[in-house]
Image 1 (cartoon, rainbow, N blue to C red):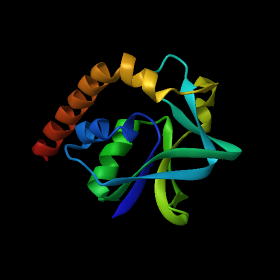
Image 2: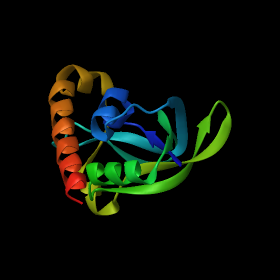
Image 3: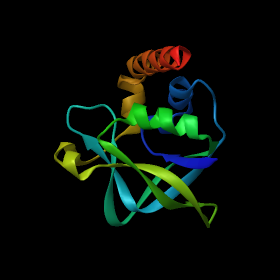
Image 4: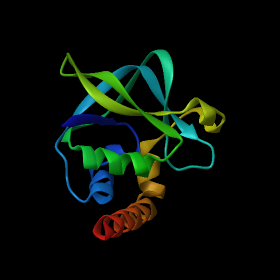
Length: 144
């Protein structure tokens, strides 16, 4: 079982539940050395390295390998999953974090991503897209 630090759209529990098909226990957490930025022509953000920065998010607890593999497919090629140490209640613990790959760095903007604006302007459409992704994943799994 693995913990996963979400900092963008997946940090909204309803989004992760729509992608994975179930709710996951979570706690607030943060990781040093990263920041969250807007992406050009995208409604979702990316994590990029930034010395001295802290990236806050939701730490989802005890995800199994199949769930992480599904999240890998949802995140796509532009993100790499990295093992990092996150801070929870003053203690460090290992977790997975999706970081923008260097090959896609030109799409990252030097502007912070606004989760409240995302929720106001894009959440319903994003949830529909997530439900379509889950339906495709479920259909693919049923064929195996």
